[in-house]
Image (cartoon, rainbow, N blue to C red; front, side, top):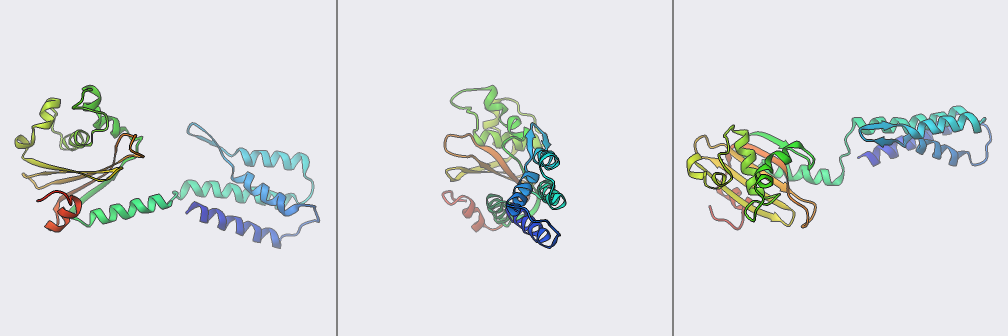
Length: 241
């Protein structure tokens, strides 16, 4: 998406430059392209973004360039405009589009959808739901264990205190819930928990970069239930409901 915007602004700049009055200058169009690129160059330090390319372009133009200043300045401004647009308009890349399609397909499998929450690998929630694994390192509790992580998320969301790590594994009868877990592919894990009392269903999608990376919670879909039996089988083809 941003690449299309960048190309559109660049062509718009070239069109504007073509109709402006300009003096003969060797390599002018190459210089204009470089001014445009400089205007869009941003230096990011921590959370601060500095339009360093625009500043350098202004200084260079002031000291080295006497001809066609207005058109060169326009190149810097068009480049800077792209930077501000990139902040306003999120980068809807191909990967993001695939993720959106995945969520759209998943939400169709639920009746009475109440919410969809999306997290990033750096979200604070990742540390929160992984606390049982981190506080009790053993063969049973490993960092990135999706079953423990999702049970922790669901119980926290329902304000149910976790009595102990062992209790987390044997609370099904006490809380009247059932759970299912299935690996969709090498880097995608599905977790589902439903409470019999209110039929509230929580569906978690865990992702990881590769087989050596830990899973993190990417999406949580909450609903009042799932649709017909066929959709259960689509979620968990290896399990029989």
